[in-house]
Image (tube, rainbow, N blue to C red):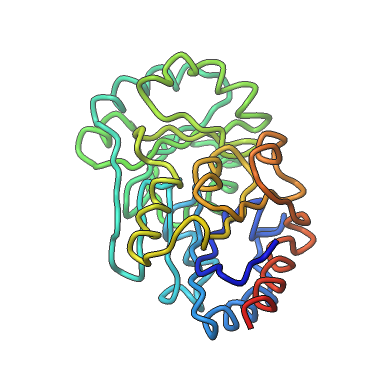
Length: 269
């Protein structure tokens, strides 16, 4: 594994760069400075909203590329590089179906904020970790008629793969449906994935797949892992990701990203 030509590092957030407490290590921020010194770019790519991502990476937010909402939007600082919105009619059509899935909470994700109609205090407390800017509304249908929406996020307290996906998998020809975590599932425009957003960043930077290193752990990372020769699955990754990735690293709680970045920096000297 020769990393000396890598010019772009891309990392998922939850289950990857963030530990199980939702924290970024101080070691990562120290390594980021060394990446900068060697002119290696960094991109955070997550299903989280943009504001939540940059809150976790506040001290470097103006120096990195950010892919948010699973590729629904990509930004560098205040500049929007790409955005893919869901057709409003499709949102109106699917909300009644989603409301009928038992024990499931619905989130409409716009560029500026998220919208929920749930009054479940347990869900709202948990939801705030991922969505810092949000409004609780009476009817998501009304929101969808007037607000451009990047993504619909669904949350199930037990398993999104077991309880949500089977109820909507018949719609996968009309929507991009991704199980994005143990509890989360995302519904987007078919062009809105991390891989397409990463290709836009690569084009801007004139960086190839051979010069790109990516870390991921779940199904919403598949397309971006395929855009890098150096694709790494975390030890805690879903088994499907372990099969797809070319390499593996330690878990998110054992500094798996940082271990590879140390090797990258050593190779690049």
